[in-house]
Image (cartoon, rainbow, N blue to C red; front, side, top):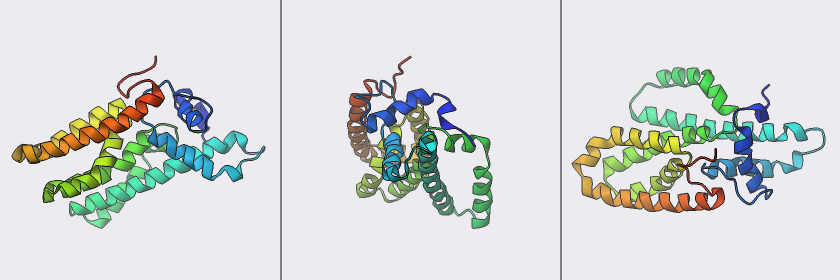
Length: 212
């Protein structure tokens, strides 16, 4: 059993839960909002289960449940992504089973930090972008632009790593038809800016700033 309030930087991240529970007006930290909204939503939906006997462990349980849901959708996404690459089902099941027992994955699922949300979105982003670059249809891009914008707003380090990864993976496709993809890039910047603006208002910091 692991008590999440003892985890790294819990005091920083629990400010977001306090914000969504109307206990504070801002967070004074630079992270995206949606992961914490999901955790707060789980807490709200389970509020009837709260009593004097489990109040200490209530947040613990909610974070673990929210993280498990996000992790489940991430694993399902990676399964479908690997299937599109023609990898045999048996190899996928073995690989994903091993992933379940990796120490970083245990840590990711057991703390109040937004990396688990990036794990959830990543395979679906790749699936959507693979479909878009195959069809060259802006309609397909519009299906993926919101989750991509959300992922890029999770955390500054995640923004940088994801941007580099996407450029490396899709560089040839972008170079081959730059101007067509440029219009989609403008749409992405617009959506990213809207989500970032909302986060900045709540945080008083951008995702590229830290309150030290």
